[in-house]
Image (cartoon, rainbow over all chains, first blue to last red; front, side, top):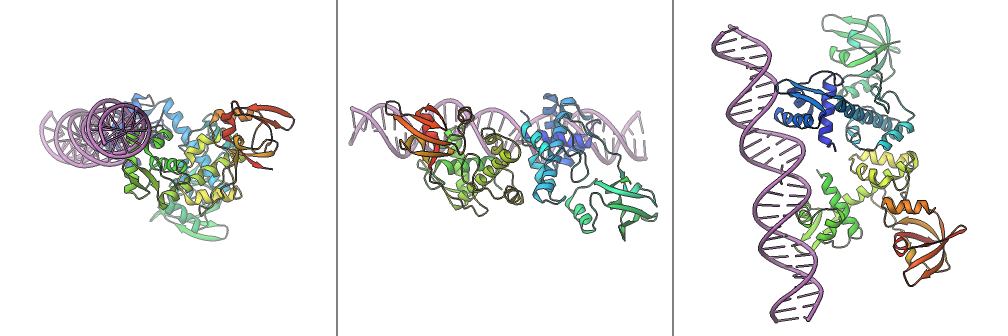
Length: 218
Length: 218
DNA sequence: AATAATTTTTAGACAAGTCTAAAAATTATT
DNA sequence: AATAATTTTTAGACTTGTCTAAAAATTATT
């Protein structure tokens, strides 16, 4: 049996380590989980014992197949619940994350698969992130950050890097959401801000915003 | 902050103590939660400290208003999730309990109230038990156990006392469900078994079954 | 290559919730 | 009312996950 805490460690390692492909070091995990490095050391030893990952002292950890399976399954559940909350229960995209953090730990194969079917097998969550299917397969989308977009071209907003409440509410208040069409008017070399056009209105976004907003070519 | 374990103790005390109205003793709680009396003593002291209940040494515990509020809220969530699982996700009435035991602990006012609205404010769960509304109000139905029904009368099945998988599957396999019409043919004084008629077929149920099946007069 | 700075691990402690075994209180029996 | 049986509580220990502070290893700097 895997505990809630173990699941959260595995999930963090998965996200920090490029879908479980890279080695992740102790401090990064501690930061991500708001805990101390010593606690992380204890837990990764335990996870290594349980064969979810490889742990080399002073080097770091890398997920093994069974660890990646656990992580993908949690990601699947998290994103399906997010779709449910937005599409059926009138949550906004900045409200879903916290609740989904809890729902993702409910253990029932039937629950997640029936939920998937009920939502008609969605492929992306409300933040534009792909949802793994029953077999754990999903498409890594060819997304480009607004900060790397080309002046003069037209894009569609497909997701965010930072899904903090602050950032999502900023986007909402500026009428930027999933699917919003964005034309790149000008890039300011001085401070890396970007002038963009939404429908008819033009606005300038900071480098920080530009780096955290993902687009795809229209 | 209330922990998951505290919530489960409060829920058990609520059910054991007639909606929180009666005093409940230590061993009863230990039995219900599959734990030891000494663990119960420790926990009820803690719950008394937190003002959820009154605890008198060697006497037992009784829920206070705040404890009843906690319990009713958990019951509300549990039963709403059961409705969701049966009506939207194709669960059968014997499959819902275990999953709902976990879903009931998710803490989000918005989640439960939106779920309630999404399900169109159901008043009863799939086992016939009433669902408290947003303010904790619900109707205690005038139900009668099959064991106390009158020979010759016709009833409708409205719920169960025992919602164990075994019992619910027994009912399913004998085509007894919510809404089934049941006529009382004969009561056997010798072993308290009851002969009943369902549509056209007649069958005999044991005293054990009869005590755990709730009816209402048709 | 030696020293300094950083990262990671170890050692020991703590809180929550549980357990066993023994002691104390209550209830039942004669 | 005294003794027996039962119930409940206490005392001390264990597990999980956490922490602090110190030690050890690694990496960076001179």
